[in-house]
View 1 (cartoon, rainbow, N blue to C red):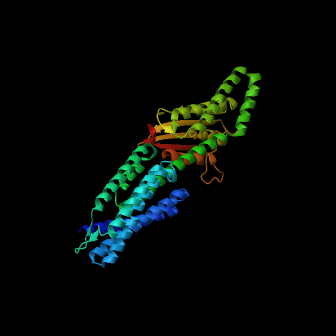
View 2: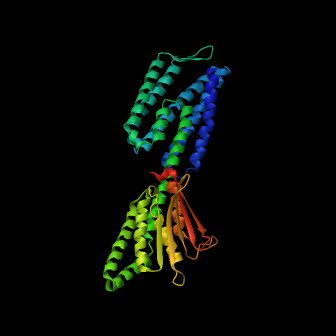
View 3: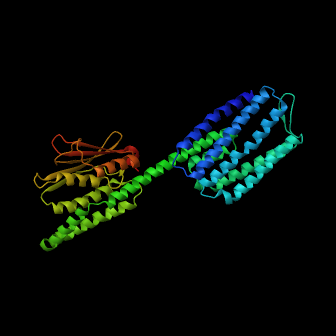
Length: 401
């Protein structure tokens, strides 16, 4: 019965190892060295599981003694290898070089002694196979278990020492893996790799979103800056007091833009609102009597990606303000939903046509960053009364952070 359950576990581990190899084949985000290391661990773990299965089969069907010995010796030569490779992977995850690590040297030496003790035991008769086809361990078995216990303690101490350098999934799986059979190590390593891939992918997406925010800041429209400075230039002679106010608002606008470069996560909506109001103060000075903005934002206690609201409002003014049309009215509203908060920006401009072939890089950038950084959405539609309506939705999970 023991052989039966052992065989089931080992047979189940083989497809896990193969699936892990498939994952490594498609996982292009992992460096070459850890990639090869993981492949070696999985191959050795699968080999150990296969040899264990062969050993169980040989004992169950009472195969010839030489064949049983050959399988047992091969298995004992392979079984320690995954543990050593997992130790090397632990060092890699901790940012250390396994080739110069004292931990690797110590465990490698103990593994060699362990293998040597096993081989000596088989060839000196210390280990034997009984007529009932069971392995009888001699006096060397004491040293075997002492060495195994010492290696386990050393590995556990190594994990504790590097605890802060590991992610939570790595900590759990490394703790369990070293004290588990080789076929279980194969399963656990597959889980480690999947967890690392998910973690790396998440970090990569966050970094991509941050870089796009920086690009959005650096791509401030040069003609907007030029026109603002020219407006200030003429106001200095015509209305110095107003020019001074525009300079202050323009300075706040620039400061908020440059601050957004350093932001790596979501920001309070109140901060985005302040940034937008500074921008609008400059624009209303430039288009006096032609631009009117209303705010109805009772809820400001939530977070959104930086440079979300201001570019939407800027886009509305850019495409909605026309000297040949009526003055432009823009409204900014926040309202609670069942599962989040909505930000609604409406304007009375020409309106947005879904079939419009013009690229909307700013809005596409905002939509992508919303989805990546907080699971939000952005929707653009044409208003029934004319103009455009942009709705940003932020789920509750990010509202109160």
